Image (cartoon, rainbow, N blue to C red; front, side, top):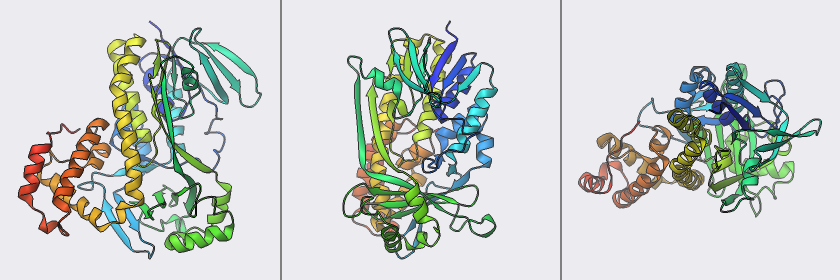
Length: 452
């Protein structure tokens, strides 16, 4: 039985997977292109906070790390909408205070996972080692040291690519026959900014909410940090009349934020410094198939299915994939062809679904969250869930607070959208809801859900 596995990438997914595999007796070598972030400060502008929800929490509990991460996370109970005039509207995420998501530092989560992985016997992480690709005939992986530029080839038995949306392992899979691949970039980019803490590290805005400044074609969001600051992400088209291309001077940036986000600008004394020093990131959806090559290599996480960040499910989805992979290893041991084939067959329908859901949620966050009719629909959703808890679970809740397959959340969510249109479009208040019609539609169209 093969007991050695090579992982490419020591990000959150790679580190978690290494930990889980090592506990099952495997020897793990990880090759990571970046330096050890526990010793070297990571560059600014590439550290969007993570939103940890039920799927991610379950994986971290399995890893024995949720208590540690929970202590340095901030619970978010809902969205806080900011109008141009500074008016605030709060939209709760779930039906009660137990349904919350947690804002966590990507870097701190990654550090904790790497440290816990290295505690396991047989786990070694090699830093500053960039993977250049893999020869699937010989099972050789090519590497280049990022400091010395020395190149080497290592012989491997089984490789799992946890090397993100620009995966080098996937790049060589593209050269194989019958490998399907697509990537779709949004016309929007993003810039990371910061709201500083107030006096004595106090939060300057509500810490228990994800703050959104929706402006239809663009938006600003802010997630709380444990130190009292907020990590902000500004989403804007790359080109056009209102775009990053036009915000090319400090005056242009200050004028734009003063007009569109005046209450946020008042809390961002370092705005122009952050704006021009931090890179402008791009957002891509990656789909490919198959995810494996015989019994030699597998893609997992963003390497197989990168998604845009607008449902807060990137790391949760990757962690869930790690859990499902090791459950198949528990069943089939190291019969890799069987493990890899079944993993991708069961998983791809769900990763395609969350990719679609994330793209749809981008439109919702930018535009619909400020619409009074949308707010009414959210109130109706909560009322329907309370009355029909096993039939009507809101789409957001199915994705975020349960571990239902993403494909179920997508299909059920679309049926729910049609039901909500039929019962909400002619009313302006929850009190006017036709409960008889609502129950008829729900009983007819929806199937009972086994929520977890």
